[in-house]
Length: 250
Image 1 (cartoon, rainbow, N blue to C red):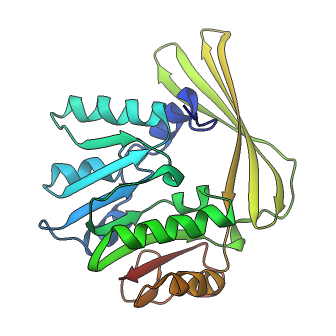
Image 2 (cartoon, rainbow, N blue to C red; image 1 turned 180 degrees about the horizontal axis):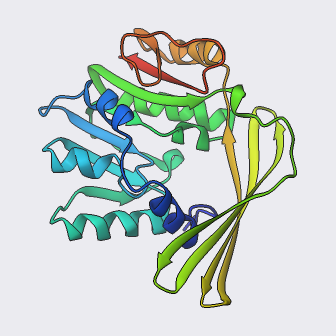
């Protein structure tokens, strides 16, 4: 079976330590499009930062992710609060579901984790087919303003994960080619004064010119596409915004 080579154990632990709570503005923004009667899908749901609060509030939301570590973390958190969400392990490119949804949403820039142009088009087509008539696909993209001025300089952060345990995370932006921003990430689990586990990941994400992506989305067949300033429902994006949110209606 195909395995993901990012979002492994230490990366997932750092992710949850760094992002313990769902961001209030983004959560309120996405929830404002949803109804308790909707069938909702969150692809690439990760460790459940958005999915679990929605599910706890009574929203009918399914999720899937390609990372075993992320799904394990999600299920542990769900069990701790007495929830049993419908989540599964799946890659976007292997998606072959006949189930229909009223809302599909991808927060946190996860849309950019699909870096191959053909796979991006296939993803858009699949989600279009999975939506009910009048349904909406909501997702955010990161723009070219995310590219750093220079490459090769590392930044390290320490995350306390236990009384005598920490994770040292080092991030080194390495290149930006063909709209793909690559960062090398090194995670070191330290117990006492000893490194007991190391993981190295090559993290790639695709950045976008929102206007060019807008054309591609319309070509898929969405009847109405609105671009939003993150995360303000009534505001249009501005030049220089790091993130733009797409609202695509079938």
